[in-house]
Image (cartoon, rainbow, N blue to C red; front, side, top):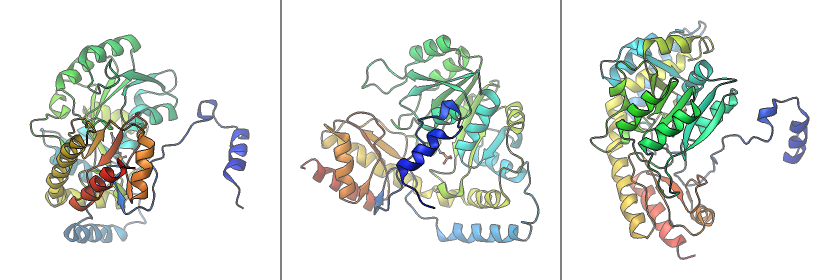
Length: 370
Ligand SMILES: *Cc1c(COP(=O)(O)O)cnc(C)c1O
């Protein structure tokens, strides 16, 4: 049975769906078949042969035991994640899920929910409000700066908004997506002091930060309401493997165990992630090359008269476009897919391989002549 989109919309409007989901739009970065895809901040490099061999072998070993449920506590994986992060973290401080999005959902299920409030500072990661409202948490769209052109999150404004809204869950994102800039830890400390709720610092892009950028992991000792999330989707080139994680007080992971589905991490997922972690040095070898391309984009878009935001991530947000949507389409027609994140006059581009970056920069220069 096939039906048109408008017929389905019609049926959807008649379904007894939750009122708060009516008219909502799902997360939807376009997945288009384009030669140069620089729109979702993936790592452009294929998984190296050495890691492919290790992943295949790890899955092969698991295959025989797929008749059994996986280790519900994913103990080995938690140990490997703690060892990777360092900072004297122990396995009971680590938690993982099918992508950091699932980990964030666990946090909201345990600490948010109906009658509770989550606060984030816009523009930031669009999934924070989507996951919050998806489980009935009221979302407050906080401000980053007072001037629309300022993406820096100010300490006073952060504290002021936390004190005003008294959120149960507060989201900081460092380096921030879509702006790219890492946060001063003074802001994290002040936000923690200002709230009675949990403070989530989303560090999906931490591995790409410029030298001297400290992680909020350094603040964990003595802060039992602080949660730092990470992912293997970006620097680790494992977006398809779906493995995200967090570090926090062991009591926080006990809370998350109350809401996760039993056996939420398949044996295959655990095996693939562990094989990847055992080869972290090989997988992370692309990070320096990606950072070089990022810095090249920053320099080159500035030279084109398009002001970039300073970036600690694997992408660059740049402004100065009279019509961002027209430029997005013009780039697409030249075989380059970037992201229109909905900030007027701005686009976001992922730093890919050198060849991809060259194609993007050439296409951008051409598109300005349209
Ligand atoms: C990409 C991204 C994630 C990663 O999500 P996964 O579910 O781990 O793939 C998390 N947070 C931010 C800010 C991101 O940009």
